[in-house]
Length: 401
Image (tube, rainbow, N blue to C red; front, side, top):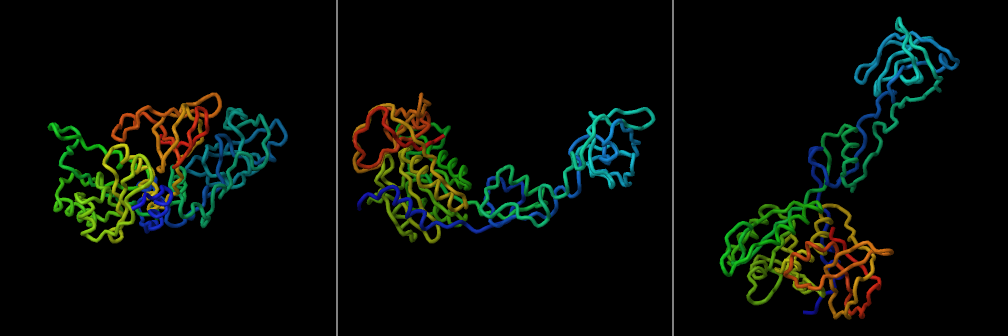
């Protein structure tokens, strides 16, 4: 089977992925979700003409000519309006957010007024009609369209929905991604390892990427190399409503690959499993009924690089999010050899230079070395059959953080 180019592989993966249906959740659970339907205002904001400052509600014509003395006939605070009507020569002490009394058309700032004995106030400055008053509906009016379907609910959008009196919001369902690590050699962090065992690490990074793109990881734990155990885990993932099943270390489809055998036995249709990329050539992609299956390589770096390139955009598509690969232009910090038929993703550190940022590749690129991936903040993207490149040549980098 020929190696599939990265871009074609991603296109095929996403071509069969549709945004999930909507559900309604409480406002406090909607952060980071995507609106499934437009949101309109259920009320007017502000619902009345409101004072924008602390001071005195006045009639502008009364203090057009100075000096001007006004009788203070009451007080208005936020949540407690003045119920009378302002007549000529009168003022009402008012605080920010309070409804403007009937008859008033301006706010005299408290620093522009002098309190007189006997309950009066002297205006030290004139003020134009409408000054320091927020008119009713300044922000929005009942029925106004506020947020479109597809909007990511960030802090500002959540606050706007709350101000518009929405206790619940219609959002795209959160993709559930079941993560399955297989291998008799694997133990969880904190365990005492035997001479032939290692600590399972890939699932933690993969789960973090799922959360970052709006998904919900379902940790199925470590499953031994047993057909029955793997089948039970996959069946459990389906029963839990997983939209995606991610296997760690099950990307090969050789004769001894239990994961592939179990999945095909359960009805998985395999789309492809060899990608023209380095690291991460063995990437298994298929469908089990309506569940996406993604088999990531077992090497830690290969697993996480493939998750960045394929799992992140898949989760984002299901969650209704736009996904733009975080690509930047830089220059090479050292010469690089001509490339072969696979696209390379080279761990590097991007540092700011005198002109363009400089991407300095790490000397060792072994796909088992997590430390260099943790130190790197980008991957230099070297296209298949790219010619030899020199220090200072332009390059494209995929940002990791």
